[in-house]
Length: 158
Ligand code: SF4
Image 1 (tube, rainbow, N blue to C red):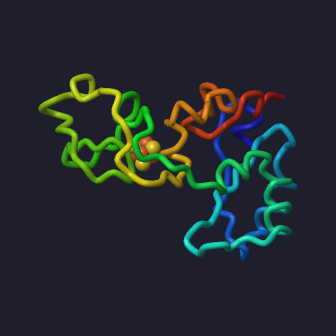
Image 2 (spheres, helix red, strand yellow):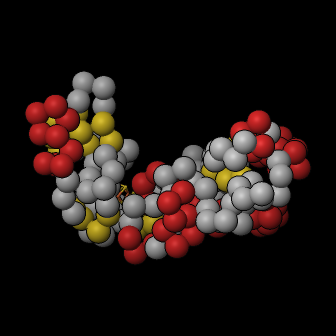
């Protein structure tokens, strides 16, 4: 609430595991209405959610359905490795959390030298921090400049 009162944007959410539903509901109730609460779909177990679960979580996070899906990404254009990078401590640069291929070294090549539009090499992209960089999904239209922080347009305004 200190952040909210001082107009400092913050990102708030939870993994939507069933045992956390009561805590997610109470968090939703405690937050001001204009603060968006994201729910990350739990995907470790196939067909985890019932229709009722999906309805409950979609009422809390209006964008839950976007996250609950996996995206076929092989061969698709993705801005990971172009506009965003996955950098490991020693300076290894990869394009994203999922593709383990090393595209260069932060200190030797610099990110500008490594930046390029590339097609995805993975079969599916299933995590928010990845698929948001697929231009065809047009998620900029929902999140605008809050894309990385997962704060949609219009959220957090008093
Ligand atoms: S679509 Fe996903 S898996 Fe493929 S490069 Fe982009 S972030 Fe990585």
